Amino acid sequence: MNPTSFVSQTSIKLIGKPVEGALERHQGVPGFDQERYSQARVVCIGAGGLIGNVAPVLVRKGVGALAILDHDEVEITNLNRQRFYPRDMGENKAIALARNLLPECTFATRITGFASSIERAIGIGIDLQCNVVICGVDNNSARVAAARHFRSKGIPVIFMGVSIQADHGYVFIQDKEGPCFGCLFPDAVDDATQPCPSTPAMAEILQILGSFGSYAIDSLICGRSRDWQYREIWLNTTTCGGARKIVLRDDCPLHTT
Image (tube, rainbow, N blue to C red):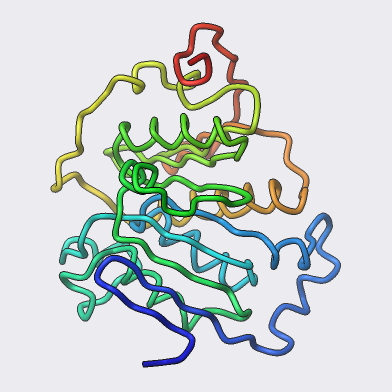
């Protein structure tokens, strides 16, 4: 076994190999701080199409540490849009994605994959301490668990979601204070509905949302300029999308309990 890796049935730990000079062209990008970025830890909830378009950007840009949580297994229908290959069939998604990210590293990024849902990770005490969380799951119970837990810890969470039509989606930043996921989607707080496995999905909207999610991470870690908290992205309109202000709800159960 590679001395920089550890594998068990429930987790994998890897360390990327630095590539000299690979990060030099980040120098001079307004607001980007490589030193701060390479000291940061990001937690990814989910390892599917959304996170699969964010995590590769993070390791190529030299993030310090990346933890990935997912309890699902790779299926053949994932291959059209997620960062998996036929060899990954039947593997846990978080472990398979962590392994697939290793060749993309340009820095000694510490990558950990956990075969666990966010709810279970919280329950058994997996180390979730980080600078920022990005949530790319397709069910509200996991989103709500993440929103509630990380708000209590003072850690910002970036939520991303796509439509069943695969033509639009959103990126929402739940910061340490202010409006939370429940303020944006109050009907989701008590929604335990699970998505149908055959729900339509395509890659294009995932790729665009991944770019906005990656930029949002930069803004939270390094302070890159950002004047939005919630963005909608559309593929089928001339305006492409827009942003709107989310109002803090005094009666929202996610940040009032």
